[in-house]
Image (cartoon, rainbow, N blue to C red):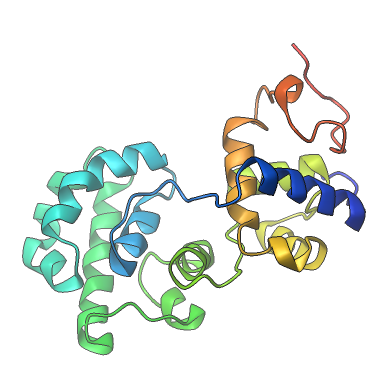
Length: 216
């Protein structure tokens, strides 16, 4: 790793199969609006989606807007998210970004990447997730699953997450760009696993460039 970049026609066939298997892949973080999506994604850093959803289930019932989150306060927020890693720092960031949204954006989540990335605790990946899932911009949020799958399979080869993001944009056909990162995340999470990929049941095993396929 990294592997050799696959050819266009092979990548098109891979995503055609992904699309046939699941035409409308969805992100697995629970949210009710753009604000709760920002919070959920920010909380998900170095945590599982399942763990975040468990913590936010009750939280978003009482704090689904920036002002409600400010009313809850940092200590109140901590009580809801203390099962999540780095919860104290994340709580500080959520309160700070909520204050900025109230002060500078009338409580609304901005739809520009630059504005999103200026919020505390919101990096490029979080901004891309929000732009893609809420505003349906064909952005690519590269996490560890996508980075591993992209390089291992040859679908999107790059030495860092920005390079992989660029490779997705450059090599995956335009008609698949909207859902590309969701297909890749789900495939990396459930099939192309880090330690023991499930190559025997993989729907693209005949197209993948990974030479050390596992058929146990």
